[in-house]
Image (cartoon, rainbow, N blue to C red; front, side):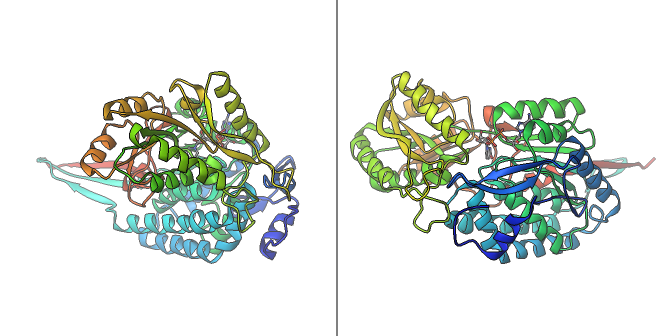
Length: 498
Ligand code: NAD
């Protein structure tokens, strides 16, 4: 149990369950073999909760429950406007329980409470509503004009949608992935990350309260190599949505390919920001510092490579360095915290390891970074923000560190900046900063990635597709109208007229 004070009674009661059970077929159950896993508060290193640890047998139970619910609960066949009532009710419950969900998310991931309560949790409610409403406006059946035939295309849900999710935005990603699948009438099995299953499990209480039929949503916490592998390989799933690293993405895609199950992969990134000399360096420096320290830099699409025009290099670097130094590091629940710990000691070591490798390859430290100590919580997994510069081929300029580390590069010509950005094997998100909108749009289109943002970074309005290309993913994205159609199976019905 967390040693931190100020927990809501609801959060305390939830965490005190021993273990927190999994949610399968509308029931709260322990693992078939009685196994448990321990989650840790990354802010102080103390045990946070004990959670039922699912393995292959539990995954199988969950997939069977989801299949049964798809066939018999009425969820798949109910009119979209009736399903929308359930999803709006669920969204209302997410809003009503925002404080509880945000505290759980902050404790489990280490992120500042203000970010969980101000963005992650409300975004889940917004996503549920957005897809529920889109489904209501989507035609289930469309006539197709062809001579000699009466033809139409009808759309049906696929069946069981499986999701394997990472630890950086656990609940937000449940919202982005589950909402279109449910709105379309599918049932689901979710395997949250082993480090951060708490908010997803609490969310199931709200699914229950919303009256969503048993078996429509199932959550099996567990490790990747056991529960995750079993879910990816399960022949009973009809779709897979994976968010995580490219390495694991390959394994998931192979397993799904083996069963001919369509798969959507949302993978890592090495986002760049191209900053031209016609912006106010102080304004952009503040925004990029906020971007790279958001969620302790553990954000797939954030700006980690900063390409700065040579004419504003000096003022930009000075201001960014000062802003990075002023970031208040602390426990996620401490009101003054701007940047929490890394999610785990393993992740902290990954970040520190990259700094060592970058240094060995000649990177210059503009701001030193390294381990951080928070006096009240000496056992927390804290790191300092770091700024590097040097050769664009340095490992820290090429690989995803997933920490509050920016790699700065100077450029003089537009083409040079585009070439530097497009050297990356990733293709998730980049941004362009310029007062010249013609140039900004030209560069935005020249950067090879799923997303190009102008005069902002980390922009996710509902209705704008968010996806990656190359090492950053394939199979469609999330958040767009097209995402709904990823969960609707098209079927052509054709009658011969003669
Ligand atoms: P990860 O790939 O290690 O794990 C992701 C999930 O896969 C976890 O639930 C894990 O338990 C599971 N898993 C691990 N091994 C598995 C296996 N053999 N079979 C099946 N499942 C397995 O990633 P992570 O460390 O949790 O998250 C960080 C990564 O996620 C980064 O690369 C980040 O960029 C990426 N990410 C991408 C997006 C996006 O939208 N593109 C969003 C968030 C995170």
